[in-house]
Image (cartoon, rainbow, N blue to C red):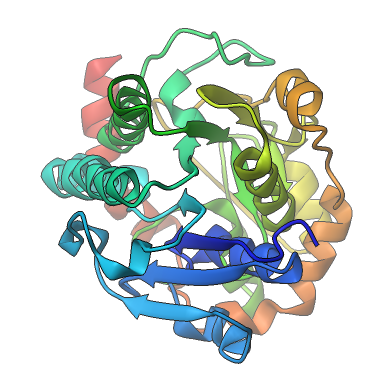
Length: 334
């Protein structure tokens, strides 16, 4: 087991990708400590680990932590997923996004630095590239289109500043389109899977943006988590890697796999026609490769579709209202 005798903190560890990260670490023999304020996550996502050796759960906000906190004592790796997502709320509440995603990251960096953590791995977002050329390499120009993207990129900049100035070992992975079981079911209009799964449960048509030909570089959350484990364990530091499947899938293909009727809604400003990670660097540096195909991943989700029964049900009218500020802000900026 690669993590035998080692301890890792996972921030946001009760959330979507974070809970898969906890699974991977526990499966590899790690002692795991989770920090999560349960705003976007569920304690039920990690409840099955309560009896695992060395497992701890702290229900708290990352911004409440100060250097010297005992939770960080003896920690080898900090894997930092905690923060807030979604485009529309970031346009409406930019200060909260900058506070959670930038200042929250700084709190984790300072705690890690003072504890002598061996590696800090930052969960960055491919949204930093904006409307990018594809396939997108790590050296692509940075052009955030909305506050969420900006806040995630500034969190990444902070991490590498701590690497440069304080010599904290840092790596960063820019996630493209993660999907899978345990994705968030509450809150603002957001990721396509959560929207579609509730619509399927309710027997309603899928609200497809544009003509559905847009493609996304979907990668199952377990495969994402495996990449972060490798990024922690590698001897390399100061690295940025793009992470996707390297094989974009269309929304129409997703609809075909889910099965159901479709209704079309207007294309939104600031959204790319295609996201596509150039994954040559992460494959070369870490030996990472995708294990779960898109078709298999969708099957796994459908096997657990009842998880989304309490999710909000969106229709064209409610989506139009929820994204009004999106259209107003990003159409004016373009």
